[in-house]
Length: 417
Image 1 (cartoon, rainbow, N blue to C red):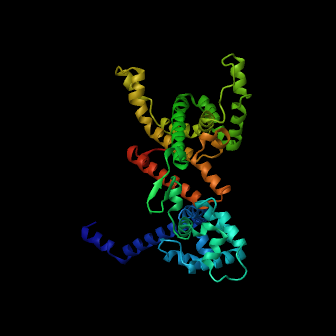
Image 2 (tube, helix red, strand yellow):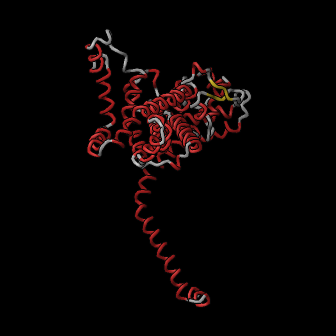
Image 3 (cartoon, rainbow, N blue to C red):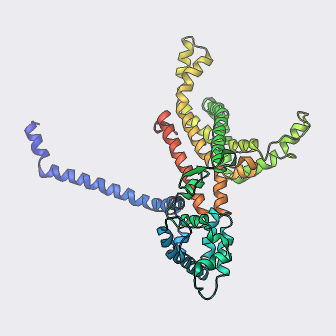
C-alpha cells in the first residue's frame, strides 16, 4: 500500500476511533484489576499499615498533659524556664490538677510524668489529694508548703517538657539520651546504657544467625538441587515440614531438648562426653540454636530456587578444560548462586531483627533483643511513646540495611524463585 494511502487510513476517523477504543479498554481493565485488589488493599491498610503508622506517630506525640491541662500547657509554653513560675502558673496547676482528677485523667498524666522522673507520680497524686477545698490567698506558697518539690526549678522544667508536643524525648530515650537543663543532648555512659546495647545485641545475634543459616543451608540447598527428583522431593518435604508447625511449638520443643535434664544433655552425659550438663539454655547458645532452626528453611529455599536454574554444563565444561572439581565449584558454580545467597541472607537477617518469642523463651538476662524491650514498654510499662520510638529506629535501621544491601549486592536483581 502506498505511503499516502497508509497515512489516510491512520488519519481516518476509523483509525482514531480504534485507538480510542483501545485506550478505553485498557482503562477499563486497569479499573477492574484495581477493584479486585481493593479489598486486599483496604485490609492491609486497616490491619497492618495504619497500626504501624499510629505506633510510629506515638514516638513524637505528647498529648497527656496538653489534653488534660490545656491552660497550664499554654502557661508553661510562655514560661522562659528561668526561676520558678509565678503565682498565675501555680493557680493554673492547682486548677488543672482538680480538673484532671475529676475527669479521671490524673493517672494518665502522672504515668506520663513518671517516665521523666520516677517520683513525679507520687508528687502529683499527693498534691491533688491535699489540695484545699477553698482557694487560698496565694497558690504558690500553699503548694510549696504541701510539697517542697514544687519550689524546684527542675520539677517545672520536666513539667514544661512533658507539656510540649511534638517532643523528641522518646526518640532520645530510645538511644539512652536526654536533654539537659542547659538544652544540650547528653548520652548515658556505655556501661549504663540499655537500648543502645540492645540494638547492638540485636544486630549481632541477627548477623550470627544469618551466618549459621548460610553455612548450614548452602549444602542442603545443593543436595536438593542435584539429587535425583525422587530423593530431592523427600528431602524438600523435611525442609518444608517446619512451616506446618507453630513457631511457639518449635521453640518450646527446643526448651525441652536443651534444658539441663533434657534429651541432648542426657545423651551427651550418657555417652561420657561431659560430666556435667552443658549450658545450652537461658543463654546466647540457646537463642542461636532456636533462631537458626526456625529461620534455616528460608535460607535453604532462597538458595535452592537459584541453584535449580544453574545448568551443570558449566561445571562439566570447566572440568573438561582441566579445572579441579573444587576449583570449578568455587569459581564457576558458587558465583552463579550468589543471587540466592544474597536473597537468603537478606530475608533471614531482616526476620531475625524482629524476633521475640525465641529469645524470650531460650535466652537469658543478657540476651534481650530490641523486640522484647518494645513488648515490655507496650504491655508492662504502658509507655507507648518509647515503644513507638524503639519501633521507629528498628524500621529506620531495616530500611538503611535494605538500601545498603541493594547498593552492594543489588537486591532488585536477586531472584527469589
